[in-house]
Amino acid sequence: MLAAAKQRYGSFQDSLKAPIHRWFTYPAGYSYKLVEAKIAGNRLTAQDWIADPFLGTGTTSLAAKLTGLNSVGIEAHPFVFWVAQTKLAFCLDPAELAADAEQVIANAQSVVVPDLGAVWPALIYKCFTPANLRHLYSLRQAILELDGLPAHKDLLKLALTGTLRTATSAGAGWPYIATNKYGQRVVERDAMAEFRKQCAAFIADLRQVQFEGIPPSEHRLIQGDAREFDRHCAPASIDLIVTSPPYLNNYDYADRTRMETYFWGIYDSWGDITRQVRDNLIIAATTQIRISQMNGIGQCPNVRRVNPEIHKELTEIIGKLATIRKSKAGKKTYDLMVAGYFEDMLKVLEGAYSVLKPGRQFVLVLGDSAPYGVHVRTDELIGELAHSVGFSRYDIEVIRSRGGKWAHNPQRHKVPLRESILTVVK
Ligand SMILES: C[S@@+](CC[C@H](N)C(=O)[O-])C[C@H]1O[C@@H](n2cnc3c(N)ncnc32)[C@H](O)[C@@H]1O
Image (cartoon, rainbow, N blue to C red; front, top):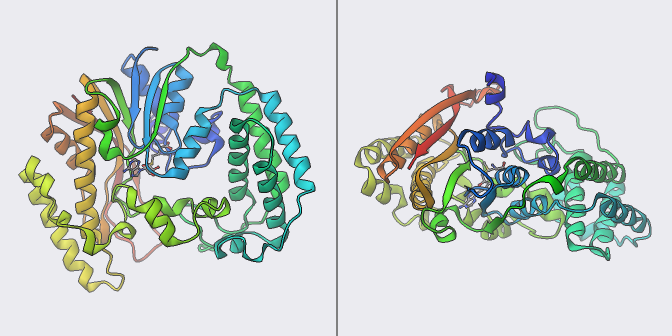
């Protein structure tokens, strides 16, 4: 295995070049090659079950389906879950999809576009010119009104969702919508032409993937909570778990799809997204913290129960962060974020221990972190917590160093960070 290939395991770069995986650009996604390598390394065969409690846009289940394995995938973010479901339902006739795509493009020409002044939240108007918004509106209507298979409509919705990112003039990059914050100029592209390109890519992928040859498999996708893993799978029923949980890096997953969910009329405000998404995710960002609702989580009662040593280390980190917070203008609640993260991840570990067959592996791609410059050895702590809940051993393979892209930021700490593959064995 080339080191360079492994370095990409935690990133979405490989998946962006692979048929079907590439249907939605999810920078938080990981490489399908990691999943394939773990399936092969664990010698799984067609009857076996692989699970991912943080399914994201479906990389694990899709890799399983393309190899003929069964899968269980859990994802709490409803829109991201819909993307995963739509990708997994790829067994469609490319010629029929192409006909529906043409129909949508033709019908879009005759959609009567109303005054678009108050159709969407303000963010959408910052991302597109009025002319392009008219194209987007027409395509949206034409898809919603298409008299076609629901699976085709979903795929065309996904193609239009991808169009939003490639057409916009806003610096719609990673991680959030930011209008050219770092000075780069992004040119707006014609939405109609971009939609055509997206559809063409989907159809080409359907032609390329010869799904008739793949052994049939079962995929249980659950819009649910990774902290309830053992409610969704029977005890000792899973042969391998491969996942990438949110990193402890203050990244707000609920905000990542703001443009998409506003455009489709799913949410219309920060409060709406908080209630329907943010509040249901494991704690990994300060935007999820409401101090009055933490109910003692800051003391990490469950970590204390399973491992007093780790509890001591976390208590020191949390104490330092609480002190630093008082001196900082932003007053970020990193202390509670760290406490909440480990309490939540502990529940995931306990569930994983229950659902995994004895002797089998739970593989996690993880990053460590240093909020306010205080290092948290996340991968090792999660490994030790896993040991405390019953896993027999753990191993950490560092795949790359992280944080370089923030080097220009003088506010940023200088603690070297890493991304690793943590493997725990039941
Ligand atoms: C690092 S991403 C996983 C990406 C995935 N490997 C892929 O390739 O698309 C972590 C995912 O965990 C989801 N998530 C956060 N909290 C969750 C929870 N409590 N239950 C299930 N999923 C959750 C987030 O919405 C996000 O999609």
